[in-house]
Amino acid sequence: MSDSGTTWQQARERQISAMRMTCEILGHILRNVSDERARALRDGPDGWSIVEIVCHLRDFDDIFLSRARMMLERDHPPLPAYDHEAMAIERAYQAQSLDEAYGALNASRANFARFFETLTPEQWARGGLHPERDSFSMTDALMQVSAHDLDHLEQITRVLRDG
Picture 1 (tube, rainbow, N blue to C red):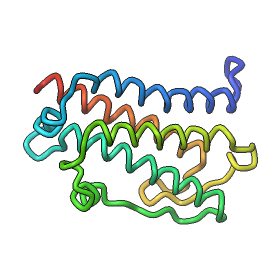
Picture 2 (picture 1 turned 90 degrees about the horizontal axis):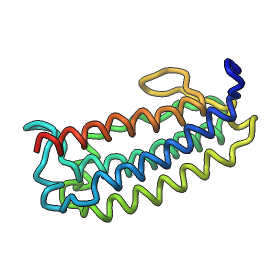
Picture 3 (picture 1 turned 60 degrees about the horizontal axis):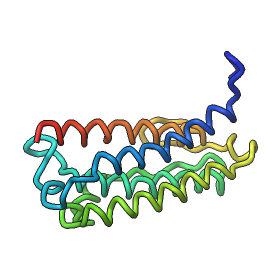
Picture 4 (picture 1 turned 90 degrees about the vertical axis):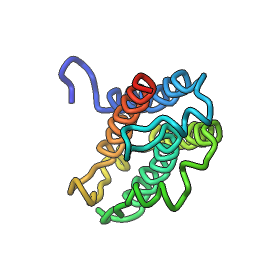
């Protein structure tokens, strides 16, 4: 990758910065949202509440990180699939505190960003077999976090707008 002088390393650094920034943006969005409102406002009649979405983001940071670590530890491992709907129920997302879930997301995100910042070129070359996407690289893992964040930032802002 070298279209306009941008290297893969620079692109990855920008993605890591974006990972951090989405948590900051989410904090601004949630600043005046109470636990009561975060539980009451939903993405449609059967959709998730805001607190459930934040819990999902928090837990999927750990899932994304565990998959990335597996790719470092084993040669092209099959990566586990997760049922996010079942996790929401099993972990009682709806009963959790918005502030605590957001605080835990910030902590996990800082840890995840540090993980990516310390990868060597050899480690960036590692990959795995994603349950939904087939072959999956470490760069794919980084990009997936940003795309996942954007999907849910849009969802939260839409729920707040419509609520």
